[in-house]
Image (cartoon, rainbow, N blue to C red):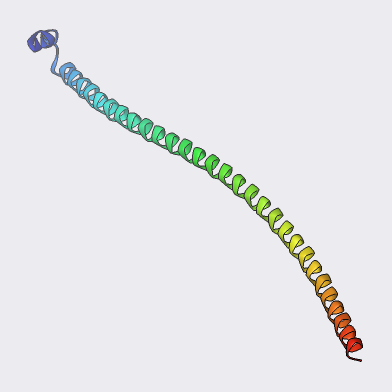
Length: 120
């Protein structure tokens, strides 16, 4: 088949044949360059898709961390409220203990006084 392709060139001047050869070489060179660029484009598209996936994964991770952070903040608030309630309850109980301790001391003094009266 190549002889049929080359047949149309018969009878052309050497200068024209040289020019045709240069053009064919240039076409081959451009085809190779186009293939290389196509490969580069495909590689860049693959890298872009990989980066897009990475960004999407990081967005999902950020959203997960944000939800987890919100949950932890709510837990901290809940624990702080529980701590405040416990501190208040402790204060109330300490007050009750102090009152009862005062009553106990008063009762001891009353007992001592009554014992002294009984001894007399």
